[in-house]
Image (cartoon, rainbow, N blue to C red):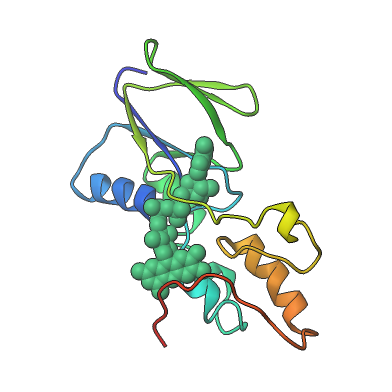
Length: 158
Ligand SMILES: Cc1cc2nc3c(=O)[nH]c(=O)nc-3n(C[C@H](O)[C@H](O)[C@H](O)COP(=O)(O)OP(=O)(O)OC[C@H]3O[C@@H](n4cnc5c(N)ncnc54)[C@H](O)[C@@H]3O)c2cc1C
């Protein structure tokens, strides 16, 4: 594809880039490749209203899936990029598929650091909190939890 922007990472940064380009009238071909199975969504409510059931999944999404069709953005969900060939301007997905690009944006964000197994990181009931699946698992266990230990103090707005 001659003028094809590939955005790797479907978080806020990837979504904002695409949405801004389209709102400025940019008509190039765009693909969004992301490891998660959901289109881009807000993370801040995950540890707040979504966790306690006051916000539904659909409201987390920056835009419904249809928006990407309407904006002619090809969505590759649950597709982790495993390598890049910078010389040939192509990238390889974990599924084995390759995609060519003329421009590439890496918006791959960050991951939670897991405790090592030697410190119990692999035990039942030990979670990281970064994405929807993490919170869905935590919410189930919280119902019967009698005590909770939180390791790591990030930002919190009450
Ligand atoms: C629970 C929680 C609560 C938060 N609350 C607040 C708050 O109240 N206020 C605030 O300002 N910020 C908050 N944050 C932080 C905020 O959500 C982040 O700053 C923001 O998500 C960063 O967006 P990003 O797009 O840069 O990266 P990310 O959100 O990390 O998105 C990156 C995406 O790239 C994907 N990806 C990574 N590698 C690959 C690959 N190789 N191939 C394909 N896809 C890949 C990931 O799966 C992910 O979907 C919170 C974060 C969390 C987790």
